[in-house]
Length: 241
Image (cartoon, rainbow, N blue to C red; front, side, top):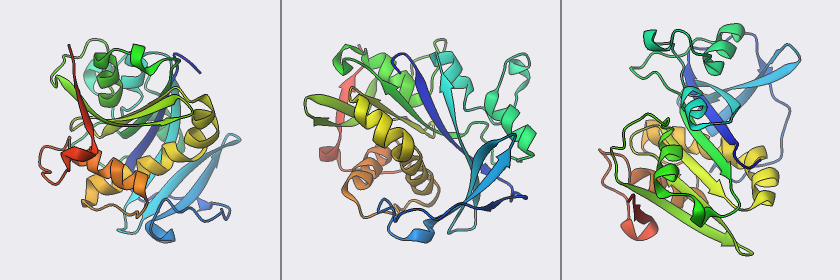
């Protein structure tokens, strides 16, 4: 899993067709009530994809893409093909075209993103690279913000850091904890936290009473230009040298 980026993506879409409810699942206490998101599945070529309806009446397409570089990670979020990317392979654009999923045009050409990076030593990852992950920046993108905002926890000597992108509709999780990455994050937290992020970003409220989501919401608020509600005592800053 090292040197691989797991990109969890959410695309606002036009109301879709040809789906069916997902199987019942165990109660998830991430959300404050069960109907914040109603999930449906699309079966296509022996694979299952997820669309979801939030309690405000808006639809989303959710999927995951595995990336091997920062440049590939950057392209994983494209939901429309601009002229300058005419020859590039855009996986998200391709799968939505095959599924006849129509992205909702709202003045933005990228999906909401949550990337996971599993590393051996978090302290050895340069801050500028952590910033590029959180912002989904490629290797040729200029550095505009000279710091990162993050929260961090430690379990049995292994650290996990959550970093917010600056007005990029994205954030990152970087962890040394392989068990957390494989058994908790990828099966559940990657998408659940992304759903919380989408809801918070679009409606300026958090649909959760749990401690970790509330810490994350404060972190996300701290990097939104029009949001002044963040509590600086609940996140850390680190400068990019």
